[in-house]
Image (cartoon, rainbow, N blue to C red; front, side, top):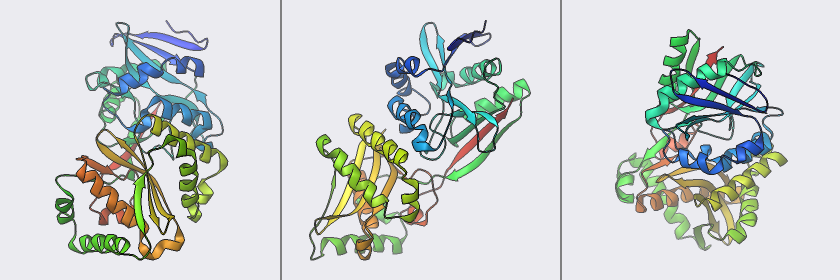
Length: 355
């Protein structure tokens, strides 16, 4: 049985799961605790799937990336227990097609996915596809899911589900997403990268340490100073001509909300390098799931001679090795410096399913 009156409820035969469409923020908010509890056990546990992050994203429509859209989150229950979430919204995709996209799409949420325990991925995906095809009120033409990591079990599960139903499905490489596996000490990390690069990192860090201008790096720990420190970070970002165009008022609002959420969640690593008492570089990272996720950065151009971005990055990598973090994840983008620091490649994918 299918209804549409603010909510769609349907029992999908063959999976034993009851699927529900949530298209109001009040219903969505009631899910917050259950959502994050399920995320702790999900096959994909990336920071961009946290409830508060995506709730903030929806409030600003990705910092203004989306001008319109309709909330279309789908949950699945089994024996009265939440077992899966497809965090979706309905809008026109970049090709102008009526589409169901993942909340967080596309530009500012590097990794996205559905939220489901590993043992439930296949059944959830098959049931979700059947449920979405039966919706009478959402005339979507394509599932258009961006930024799914290449090793996500969602990809083969959706390929199998669409094959069983005779639906066209494509999975394509979307962007590089390099990361550094961290094993052993700081010195062991350095020994594992290119000799020339190792020399450059050490030389630049020593140059700042021995500078006549006092230098220090620190991580913001005081919540009372977070707003001011966030503004300082955005000011560093805005010195990049490309980033200043990105930082429209809605995007600034989104970035500040993400900083506050991450701080309150205990996963924010907002780090600055100061030279001569002035902020020369900043990194906005997440310290989550025993790895560092490098979200954004900014530099003061007057300190370029000190290579402050490299120096701060070196200090953050040293800290990560000392704290036994498992990975240093650069998220999306194939900028050369990431590979010079020893990153290895992987990709995020775009999954499309035609109705």
